[in-house]
Length: 244
Image 1 (tube, rainbow, N blue to C red):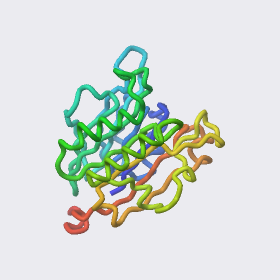
Image 2: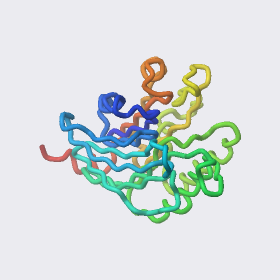
Image 3: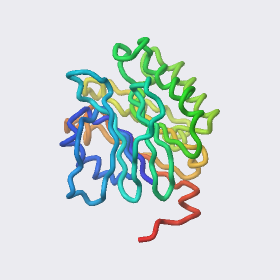
Image 4: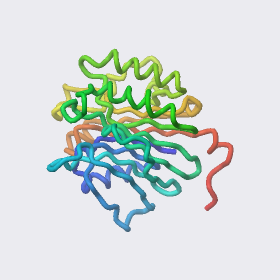
């Protein structure tokens, strides 16, 4: 199973081809716009979308996409967390995806910080769920002032049996060495703020690839690069691939 988290910086009509080239199975895409996937795609795509900010003039959306043999449908869980899009994915392995796009505090009731928004997902939504869960997206953390809260979120996820795929794949390595955002499109302003958290049981066989500045930012696709996670869930290993 290939999971992708990417902030496409809008431009999704143009950028979908680059996401498709990553051969994703399940993708969490932030700052995308409303879109329709054409019938000329190699594999059937299903998607769920929601606006990040529900108001006139705001076109940036949060989306979850799945390609056959996986399918995605909306999962109504919360109506007071605009930064969260829960989705149910069915296929060779069924799972819940919690897509997160931490919003600027000015757009959030109570002006919650980026990390505080994710903390609410962990505390209020995750305990409701059964079965495997993936939490992924642009968490906008850690950045200045949020390192402690982000570390607390990572620890809270660990108590619920979830781990950062990047950290598992790069033990002992500083995430800052492999940034996912280049602020203001500048190579010298890097941050690692896009994340994919998976069940700890999936961490036995996980690999991670992070896009490079030259391919994704210098070409003006986005100021973010994709985080690509390949996992082999035990269920999939045990059951084998789906029939052709």
